[in-house]
Length: 279
Image (cartoon, rainbow, N blue to C red; front, top):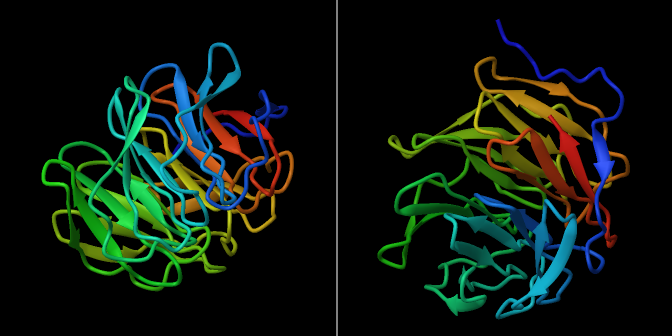
């Protein structure tokens, strides 16, 4: 029997302090541990921010080494390190040191990263990536070797709203985006993809995934809609949750917060809106 998160209560969404500037295509969020989330503004800017959950406040930190556009993505791998795509049709890949508040160029990805670019990490040596841009490219980055390896391509081209969520050492789940309903699971040991239950509606710019560490994955639909869903891994099925307080579009992003019962979300759509969701 699948026990879904309880949703029939008064609003689980609440506004938090607005982002320092309007977030657009390439907006991204990440969290791994500690009191802070990290975010790209996107929209062709280099702005990079830190959000304090206890203080509900934002701080501008060292800007990205290049302007961030569509396909911008972030993934925090431990307490001290974040990796990033600036996207925008380029091949750059960066590493950010939290303690030094500084960026470094890493081996460029052998693809052009655009809308639908995404990063995922669980543990160990490898970060997994979509290059997006209407391609099916899927690659693995070795942290230790600073090198990229092409993996089995996604089942179909990935576009705006493409997203990845690694749930274990064995599996990664993915949104196709690009106005499609494709939702897939990638087997890391098998280097193979399988189609899972399609999303309830088409996913576009602002589509995002967040795994909370249990049996559920949460998703923003994006595409200037207020769709918000929960996917049950054991049941391979979706349910619609309480809609976001306003529509989510380009630059929309969703992040888990460790094992806490919260998600955080940027609305994107050239706004500063930032929300917390109580699971």
